[in-house]
Amino acid sequence: MSGVTTHVLDLTHGLPADHVAIDLYYTEPSSESSQLIKTAVTNSDGRLDQPLLSEEEVRPGRYELVFHIGDYFRSKRIQPHNPAFLEDVPVRFYILQTNRHYHVPLLISPYGYQIYRGS
View: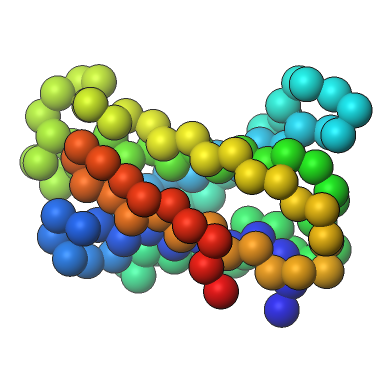
């Protein structure tokens, strides 16, 4: 399997993070301007129903995921402030080999996060 996938886990509750909005941006290798290419929302398992990008859609270049976790924690009544301490979590990564699978999971709490390349 190739392409780009993600999921979000809520460390505060020990559960998948549902209804987290995610924006995906792409920057051409020869440019500095990013363009929004997709918006998705996590399901009840903290995953997306479809990959962010299929194997056919992946191009070399810089990508940025923006996870909108402030709304998520407000919906759980954990973070009443607007904006929250961590309103959005941006993650930039590069794809050079388009025939590989890039899984980018996010672990969240109201005051911290961890990102890694999964499998």
